[in-house]
Amino acid sequence: MTSHSNSPQHHSGDQGAPATELVVDVGAIAHGGHFVARHEGRVIFVRHAIPGEKVRIRLTDSGDSSRFWRADVVEVLEASPDRVPHFWKQADSLGSWSRGAPPVGGAELGHISLQRQRALKADVLAEQLKRLAGLDLTTEVEAVGDQHDGGLGWRTRASFAVTPKGRLGMHAHRSDVVLPIKEMPLALTGVNELKLWDLDLSGIARVEVAVPANGSRPLILLAPEESTSPKRLHSILSQLPHHVSVASFDPSKGEVLQLRGRTWVQETAAGHEYRVTGEGFWQIHKDAPDTLVDAVTGYLSGGGYLQPGATVADLYAGAGLFTAPLADVVGVTGSVLSVEGAPGTSRDARKNLHGEAQVEIVQGRVEKVLHQRARSFDSVVLDPPRAGAGKAVVKQLMATGPRAIAYVSCDPASFARDLGYFHQGGWRLESLRAFDLYPNTHHLETVGLMVPAA
Image: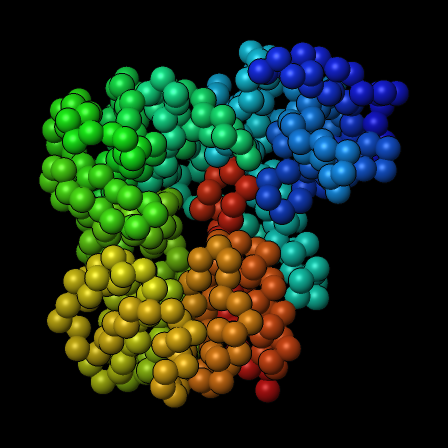
């Protein structure tokens, strides 16, 4: 993996700074959506490449003291057979840099065939499991939903920045640069039909959009800049489509204020209706909620760990996606403890599970709730945020003596690290499934079944 340029070439780049370009051979994929190349012994994390290619790269982060450099591909000299034309002009590295600007983030594998994307994600998962949990295991990353849509049109939620000129935009990777956009091909048609890129959004720092897959009323959240007047906010409100709920929100305080319609959306999954507040967590892919509920209940019911009368816990429960189907199975003779840290989402869970006498909803940090009083469970569903559950929670969970834990993870590194903690405590990974719930990006979702080794 040596460089084929004798010395770095300097080209003037954006903002007038000289940009360094190199020619490199591309190696394996690494966790985070980039590929490993080397130049004179230094590791370079290259985005928008494919293993085996020879490419010209533009260094985007290359301090002399940096342990590694970062770069984008600007020209492909020897292409992989798995390279396809990028579906989104503004996320395509080759086209973007030829126009003198970086690509937007969020579709960093869009230049790779979907089949190869899933194979590369399987490589990342296997590498993390080997490195962090000492496990030799290869798991197929399963396709989800319609396979004829090119991995497009799946996002029910999208987050946008605003350019200095007040246009809807997105950030370049690891950058403060906001680039204007005119489409979001990964999102549901309903997101694109809002045509937010036609509006003057001056005075707004961030825009969040939720368009439920069931066709119910969309919600637009506006995060105003501190100096934005109520008058300016109402002028933006008057430009937005009338059928859409609109709220303002303060990300630092988690406060959502109604401007029009409601401050939540109505989602449907696993035969249940869920209300989810503006900034509350909900799975992004339109088919993710049902896919994950089926995987979790399949593991627990299939193994005999979930049946009428069972005592189960749903930790990091959000609005109750798993709590409701768990309550269906355990019935009135069983019990479900549902724990969520975010106050707004915990209120959602209360409303969503109102009238289910067997469900106890507790708002608070998982480690604190488990510490407060001794509990024992037949089985547990664990669906932590990207950072994972962590050592303290894993130890507490093992101490509650469940017969099985279904662990849902959106990050293979934190999942593998936590798996290592379970192994140290005498548990093992019984089964593992991986799902391509974020096509054309480097993310994947896993569902693992953990059981005591004895």
